[in-house]
Image (cartoon, rainbow, N blue to C red):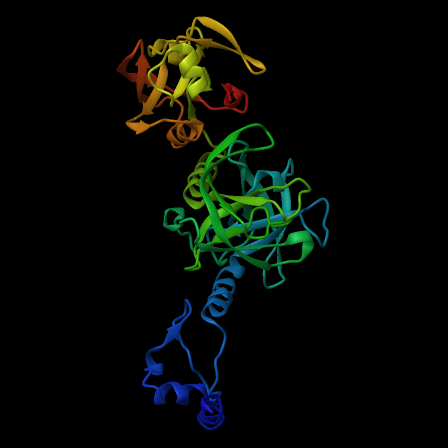
Length: 376
């Protein structure tokens, strides 16, 4: 009987009328990123859900800033990947594995027009390339902050999976501060992990937070088949912009590094060595006469077999860099990621059971080669 009565009210007055009779202030109910009223127009019925409306608003806001990148020498319908316009004068950020060894490109805009673009520079360590399109007045994306993300936050990705242009996918942040190895062997810390469906053609596109701003650059898929059943990763927007600004200014990116052979400490190594700590970065060897050596870091002197590698025990254990705790390789890479060659850093190390501070250790330049001077 109750259902029959309620249905008759809805038939005559609609859902809005039913809620008003129940004392619900429907005029104050709003939804979506655009803050649209829940009931609009002459149709007295529920419109899109809040989440649907938010996704539509985010897509419409960001898609004009996403391009499709195509090699000028191999013009095709599928393209090579996506890119993001970061300034109205035509600077575009994408992945280095999207641009490859090319230097001249064509970018397709969301309105169907095309522009010539040239490579400004790239960074193999962060897998970033910057292009400059021959255009003015482009729609630059709104850059947000990855710091606003939490595990469980909703995120969106726009790209061109398998050539299906300007496609939107949605997922959640499934992990933060992930350490991811690139194809070149370099390691990128602080990556955003997401379960949003990412496929070939999404690389170089934006990962958007629920306020419609760019929180990261879609960078890689971890999958046995290369398809979307794997987890996906995005480079935080702060790192992306730091590298991009360096490339725009100088044509390249430079990062500081310690010239040591390192080992991530664990309980097994600590117990064998008689150490009182189980976290940190063990200095296995230093480059003789190198900056770390000059700065006072000491390597080990007892060679032991560790898995497939030979490491040296008895050296310093780095526990902090510039006051930031270093418990793992993720901390180690993150602490050095914003530094430059020639910077002086303060290292806190454990030596012979005592914690000491080395104040003026000079950093060398990080390269693909010395990025591999670590043992897991």
